[in-house]
Image: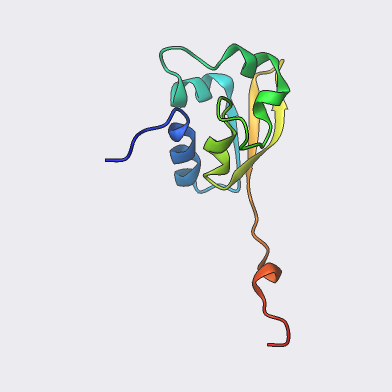
Length: 98
């Protein structure tokens, strides 16, 4: 059985919602990931927590990046975040001359 990681809840949610854009309030995010403790304080106060960056596993980025989403907008005062599905470009996979 695979080990559950801290941010697997957001990965699972985003993979299964089917939308190209997802907006979640911080309360909804709490319910998905942190029902007992809530979002980390830094997520509510610091935009850097929401950076699309795998290099900081203590932050949530790999949760949404693993689901092929990226954060496109965060509103700290109104407490919501907007994710867009990452678009893979077909031109990267075309062979030259074929």
